[in-house]
Amino acid sequence: MYKVNIVVPSLTTDSHLVRCLNGVQNLNYKNFFVTLVLDDNKNLSILKKFKFKIKILFLKKINMSKKRNVATKEFNSDFLAFIDSDACPSKNWLTNAIKEIKSKKIEIIGGPNIPFENQNFWQKISYYCKRSFFVTAHYNFVNYKSKSRYCEFLHSSNFIIRKRLYLSINGMDKNLYIGEDHDFFHRLNEKFKNLKVYFAKNVFVYHEDREFKFFLMQRFCYGLNVFTAKNTKIKRFLALIPFFSICIVFFLLLNLSKLSLIILSLFFVLLSSIIFWEINKYVKEFGTKLVMIICIYLSNLFYGLGTFVYFCGLRDMIEKKIYRNIRKKN
Image (cartoon, rainbow, N blue to C red; front, side, top):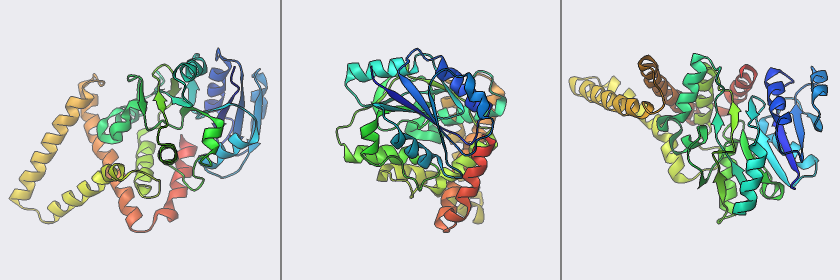
């Protein structure tokens, strides 16, 4: 039976982390230990109720990439299982993962992030945005129980990987504050051309979505890192579409005429109709669909603005502050 190190980076011991560890305690796969990487030592007495082995590391004011990397090097294990502190594993999370690893002879696997049922309206909006092709493009499958498949990317809040494979590329880029999972899988696929990355719909975790205003901040940070994280040329081109769209709309508004007004109106009517058709598959309420159309536009606006700020050379000045605020409010 493989020994698994479950890595959970977190700012502090809060209710989110306790919920995550409650889920870990209910796992039916038992050959594991947990490595917590925390900023502070507050409320550690809460951890005494858990019966599994917990190793705790304290690293102040560093990003999640560094926390994950440190946790993977400290202790012996066959596999590393990554989960965020605001997520909670399903009971069969590791059992199903190890079963697929053995049957398919693979070394890396992950699955969907399912929202909690008690999320508020704006958290649901954030989740719906992540499911939309117009926000997350061809990566949207990781956000719901889509069909199992081989893929190029898994979310950092839910994947299991053989330890030596993770360490072979020195883990995640310690300089990235956001988009580190995209960068990691790009480098991994570059080094191992025949690598099989598997997305299994039964290897799922429950994940709490951000309030929409913090989701927009996250989108802004993704835009900031279009050229920082390693990626393929085609994916960078797709990521630049929001920026180019904003430039075109701004140009038409500066040169406002009847023709440009007609072009803009037709563009938004056509695009809104396509978005409405897409979200109709998973959003039931008509009012929510209308809100969703606006929020999808806002998501791309903030992404494009982030890219604009990057081109202005202001990324390093503001990214850490925004990132820290997102983590605190999450």
